[in-house]
Image (cartoon, rainbow, N blue to C red):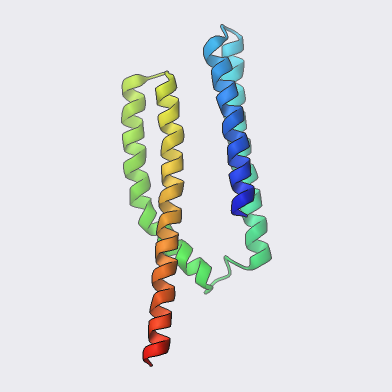
Length: 141
């Protein structure tokens, strides 16, 4: 699943970069069309990733109540929430200062990537900690 999502994100980023370049070089009315297409593309990309994720979760029962994966996911989500707030506030500050520029757009995309990375790092740390506690309890009992 991670490879599928990574593939979708790489293709999505390439298309977004192309649309952004078009929006920055084209004059009116094409600039507006490019920006609308970017918004539509981002929403479509989000929906595609959610569809892949839900399909994977249904196949593996990963979000079943009481499962190990669900517990680790909820723990990581709650810990990454504060990170997300801080990252988004900083990104908003950059966007407020630089306005409608390429840097502002890149900062927003970078903020989204950092939020996702924060969750996955916390998820892996929680999983490793839980598994090491389980192994320690097994061998020390």
